[in-house]
Structures are given as structure tokens and as C-alpha cells.
Image (cartoon, rainbow, N blue to C red; front, top):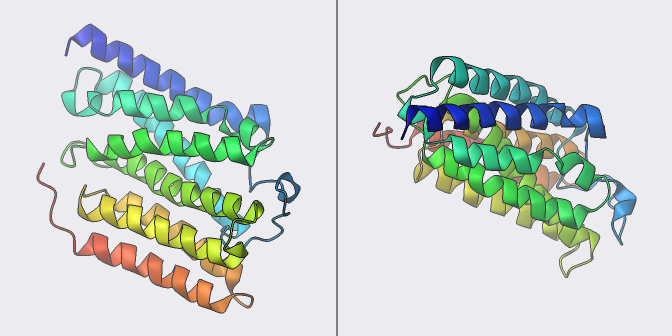
Length: 241
């Protein structure tokens, strides 16, 4: 790693982060796909978190900006910080046009959000948990945790919206199970930070709220999933670094 190369990556991360953060101002805020963008309209789909849950994006945006700017100003040549830059640059650069894509094509948006998720999870796997935890690991964990849930929700919406075999409730369970599998693997195998578990649990609680009084078994399942992810984090092996 050269100092000049690391600094260039730090600059690119700031640019990708800012492009990602300002994208809602260019494309409009996002609180879910247009129900009529699917062959089978998805009005109040059970897999989608209640609207308030999307407020987490304000925290994610702010923390990512702090992370990127601090990394450039104070940690430009730090190896622990540099390890996560390329995957975060890739994820955020792909995410910059995501809202615009989601407003026109749920299928394309689903493919794109999974393309965002993979490098975000790679970044989590590369984290040094002992180095600036609240500025390095925490914002990346929060972003990747919410993205994990959102990616699984998107798959379930596409499956239900195109009428693939299972129906809305069946696909809601698929989305919930998929989020739990990925979340559990990241927490136990990769030792994802607490913010990862909190963001995924926040999304699941949103699903619980969405289904209270309508699909009670799914509400209970989502609540149990949120508790399970937090319990897994609390009992995970300690990070090695």
C-alpha cells in the first residue's frame, strides 16, 4: 500500500459517499416501491417494514459522511481503514442511482441492491474491530445491516409482485428467513459489529409493526427474528482483532 494510493482511495470514498447521500435530493425520497410497478400491485405488502423504519437512513447517511471525511483527514494512510475502501466505494457508487432505478423498475432495483450488498458485506468482513470502532466499524455495520434486510425485502416483493408460486405471505416468510440466514452468518462467522445487528433488527421490528393486527404469525416471526439476531450478537465469539 502506497500513501498516495491510499489517499486517492480515501478521496474516492468521500466522492462516492457524497454522491450516495445527495441522491435522494436528485431523485426524491424512497419509502417503498410503487405498488403499481408490479404485475400484481403490492399495496401494503406484509414483508415491507412500516414507513417510520426508513428514517434510519438519516443516521446512515450522516454516519457514512463522518466516516469518509474522518478517514480522509485523519486516517488516509491507515491500513485498517484502507482495507474497506474499495468495497465501500463500489457499494456506494452503485447505490447512488438506486432510488432513480427503484422508481422505474423493481426488477432492476432488486438486482442493483444485491450488487450493492455484496461489497458492503465484504467491507464488514474486512473490518478491524479494534481500530476507531465508532468511526470505522459502526457506520459500515449500520449500512450493511439495513442493506441486508432491504435486499431480502426486495426479493420477496418481486416474488409476490410477479405471482411466483408462494403469494404475498409466503414470500414475506422467504424474505424474513433469507434476512435471518445472512444476518446470522455475518454476526457469527464474520463477527459483524453491533450496529449491523441493530440495523437488521430495526428492519425486522418494522416488519412486525407492519403486520400487527393483520398477519400476526408474521409479526411474531419478525419480532422473534430481531431478538434472535441481537442474542446471536451478544453471545458471539469475541473479535480477533
